[in-house]
Image: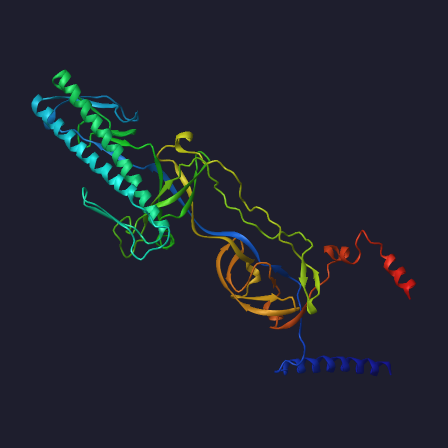
Amino acid sequence: MRKYKKRFLQAAVILFIGLNFILVYIDKEEKVDRIAYISEWSKAFQTDLEENLHTSGVLTAVDENYVYFDEQAGSFAEFLVEKGDQVTNGDPLFSYTVDNYYEAESQLLQAITQLEGEITAIQQAISQMNAVQIPQTNTEAPPSLEITEEEIQVEFPQDPIQAAIVKEQYLVEKEKELAQKNAALTSMEDQLTELQSTGDTITVESPYSGSVAAISPELKDPIMIIESQELQAEGELSEQDRAAIETGQPVEIEVVEKDIHLQGTIEQVSDKPKDTPTVNDASIYPFIVSLQDDGHDSRTTEATLPSDESADETLPTEGGDTQDNQTDLPEKEVDKENNVDQQLPEETNLLPGYHTRLVITTKSSMQATALFEEMVHQNTVWKMTNEGKIVEQQIESGILMNKMLEITSGVQPNEWVAGNPESQLRNQAAFITPLKWGNGFRSTINPKEIKWYEPLLTGLVSR
């Protein structure tokens, strides 16, 4: 008899389960309530995200200045500097004796007159640019400046910020050009004074500051190359990387041999390959990074991540009740350090030829709404509402960094998202979550400041 009862009970259980399965399967109108059991969940948070491109580079001098000698001007006497010497504006480079005093004097006077005219034109251009007023708001007709002395017309963009940048860049370039012309004028005046004093000797002074990179004992032009003291980083990009790089992007520079970290920006990126393009060879695109000279900068970016530790966050459940969350979202730093001083080339004895590691920030988003990558299922998330329902939500994503995915639309900060496999979830279904006794739930039902028996005794006495 017991054997038949056992078989009957087994058949009844199987029939019950099968019947429920069939009812759920054929429930096209969703009259049968579904309840989703959520074991993993997370809250959308805000953090700074960026996409980086890692490559290598080498330090080079910003400028190479060439010094020439006209053999028709006279006979070369001697070099007054050696390769590797540091020179400044006005330092003697070499000397020569003139063959014709009056012709040499006339050429120097003519060069001085020409330089004085060029200096006057540059000063006028600077004055005209300083007088240009950049509007505070966008205008339909952007301001323009026509400099007739140099036959140059400067067009400003409509955006006031961009227009101010154009103005500032123009002034910086003109101030640099003015300094070079003044140095050349001083050199010519000194040569004229020496010629008039000695009668046949001229000492050529350096119009540049920097390091003597090369000297030609055979007097082949250029007889001398002077590299500027300012450094830059140069590198090369593949075809794929070239598509992501634009001028103005920030760059972190690590000098390998010195363990020094600098900040810079993409100054120039070539639109043409380094070599003649061919069908079978990959194209390489050179680029230049200018170094910042502000003296201090941080080489790091902070990112705030949800902690693995538990805390007292509450989670919506069915009926609007709340339950302790599985995870909290305190901030912490990720592989970064703060307040790293920017060290300049002059302070660290950096030299051209030092190799570097470059980290180029191609995209960045400050205080972006983000979720962990595993919470997103093919551009879809399952939001947990305050009404205790699970809702399917399409999202648009952006930057992916350290398994954190930027959410550009579809989710707001502090909204809850389920992390269960998508096959276990159903749109508009009610959901339940496990209670975590040691995760704040214990303190909720049994606070330390309240004795559990006091409410019980009060209730008994009142009845």
